[in-house]
Length: 479
Ligand code: ARG
Image 1 (cartoon, rainbow, N blue to C red):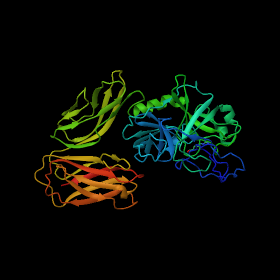
Image 2: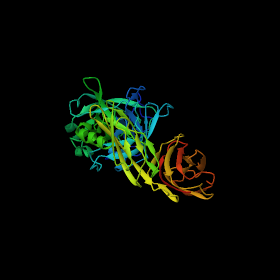
Image 3: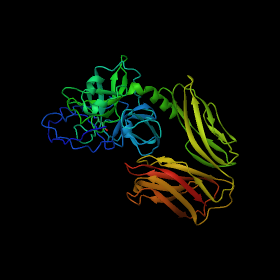
Image 4: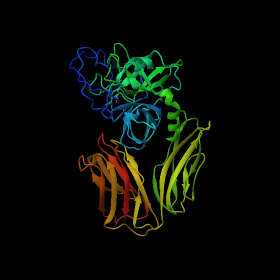
């Protein structure tokens, strides 16, 4: 991305000799490049590729910002730093897995909940990032990453849904191609931006002399792989940048995965689990009340079961069952608790999940807030919930009870939002009005005079259309 010149595509030029794969992405730092000279006749802008078969690259992922990625653990996608924003909570990315056709109804999608961008990334080298999904894709085979240079030779396999020609559009069907290894010295010798090649952090590939095959805009973040002696796919590179696509003497540049392998592994541990380890899905954020018994479940996958469970940060009066992971008990002190649940497998590998647990005082019969974020997956008609438990209050809600809702979302017209009373009665608050307006920040007045105050109240958010996503930021119930 550093310098990709955008060249005008000559129409019609040699249609792809096969199919091709170029990927491009809107999100990438595709610079509005200086208008370079238009290429002259010739096959330069064709990125030669062919369609991949369903299941051929079972760890490949398409990311909604227009990049590729690969499954590193069931919950983590390895991609390029230039495809993402800063490290932190991020519910804006949708990952699509399990299909070569992005419109295949059998595709699996997940929303992100966190982005980890390589520390020190500044647009030059260090072009890697991990995206954590809101729930694991347990069916996905994982792609191992190189830890040494032993496979840095011969041909590599690349694939993606990016542009099939320089300046071309994104693809619906996954394309693949083979690109030969190019030494750092030869790559640097291409001059221009290539003079700044960072030998340890970047690796080049392509037909140096003749071009013709390459990744392209929208392939960024996707893997460059090669089979090892055991016939397993190993990730050697991450699509990073190039000048144009498939031009002679302008090879594709990839992040050199082996150089970052320890950093990537350690980042994964900090995000909840490394490959081959255990990953844990916690119960999600909670808002309960002092003196009311609770039961919260977590699940673990990966590693070697059985798991033994422990937890830190639990409210007094509660504990975790070391063999089932279930948290039970009756919180005895109000407060906001950050709870981390850990599962340890029989080989001593661990996975963790954290959640925020607000324990409200007994008799909080006025306004009660649940301020923990809950991400709303795209096109999700099951709905996600944010709960508030009320205890120690007498009688029913008022005619003019208030429900203050704050949802961050890029398309209000996608959303259906309901209040679900402790007895299951549903009060619709918002039903897809507002079109493309962002966010819901509204106080709804609801007649709750037939509902007893005590019990667990739930705010349900559903997303009835594809593309935009968001999260429940907070909500306040005043009975
Ligand atoms: N930066 C591009 C992207 O965001 C990838 C470019 C790869 N270019 C190349 N010629 N190999 O999709």
